[in-house]
Length: 109
Image: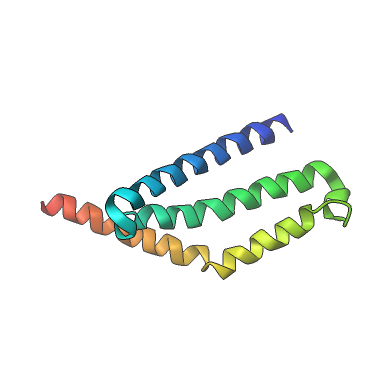
């Protein structure tokens, strides 16, 4: 359990830093200049939230799936959000395309 708590803390902090960087980029170079980070946030945030909620359910055992806690509902909501915002594969494809283009530009220039 302590491993999950520590891992949750690290993953959430990584997301906070990515969000701060993205917000700074959006303010300084605009949304188009922050596009890669925006895709990264869409990939990472829902995955981390789902992981943390999953571990919370695990800690609570069968009660984590009951109506006594909001964990099962939270899990269903985050899983639904991963589809509603566009499948992860769409964001990963866009991020990879951006990264490949950036690498090609750096080699050409």
